[in-house]
Length: 300
Image (tube, rainbow, N blue to C red; front, side, top):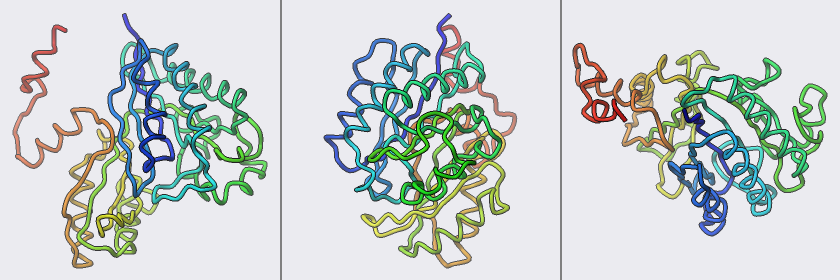
């Protein structure tokens, strides 16, 4: 039976469409690789790609894309609202079918080692692939971002897992890992006051005593003249989307602002949305088997 992984590489380019298409092009034309989605945001200045494939195919195509991004992206010129430390900022692998998390960890290590050797790129491992407990959390690794990493990487405790102990001159550093599915969920507010978004983010994220499986920051969406609470839901089965949505609404009221919309970046498991529908509709004894599409797919 086919073995499948999901890979969600994040690149530090969300504005130059020509560069974006060059990075994505190999994913569109490779046998054994399914390009599920790609989305770029100008404010975040970030490209998020979602792929599905086997280990052999993913290793080859992700390695190629890393090389393309290194050639195209100069971190010395990069500006954006999203935290980042490299041209290829983060490359997570998630087990999907007929594979276990340990297989995703093995794949992450193989991709990281090859990229570090060929591109002279410092690479850190995170989440389930982390070799040190203090490196499990992506935010801890990325703290200081590209501008502060030249000094950080020189510290003995921040020696990369693979590659040189110095930043690539234009591509910075990269983080590769293995994790369960993550939901990138952003909530927009009817204000341009970034401090309000930051205060709400501090209130709801786990690191400050908020919701257990939520990472959050405030983002300035200057093109829309609003701000956003940008979240990574690291385990939607234990902290649901509706819980984070409702908490942001409650906190926003403290500052006299309203939630005016939300967005999902990339893909998410259907169960994450089923949980939202069940909560807001007050469904009793709801079963996934009641979803028509699930029944149709049972024998496929």
